[in-house]
Image (cartoon, rainbow, N blue to C red; front, side):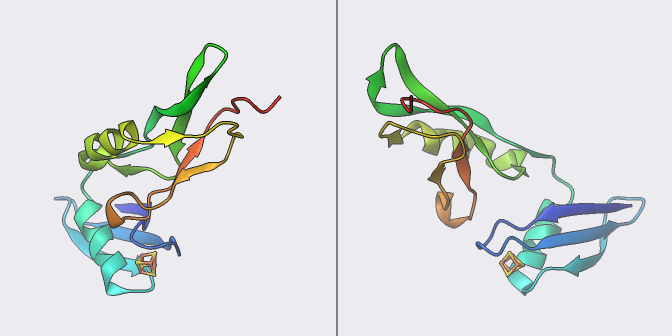
Length: 123
Ligand code: SF4
């Protein structure tokens, strides 16, 4: 079985393919420009990966709106979701915010990029 993932250990964002045997053991790692990324791929090969969606507070309300919806641009290991959401809860972003604006791109030293999924205060 083969799985593909996008390395989130640096901004390059290599695509890496992992070949697993019937028991789910990694037998081959294809792609990635460095050992750090190949290790990331091995460590996350058996994990569920998911896009994180949540909200980030605005520094000031825009009418009734006090938060902007956001999401990670790539799936991340489910085991890291709680830390990512907790970190995003500590952030505040100044309006106006346009859809696609980068809210943060280096959570916990990992290059997890989070973008706004809706514009707020841009009209
Ligand atoms: S494999 Fe290496 S170069 Fe590629 S994204 Fe990962 S850390 Fe960066």
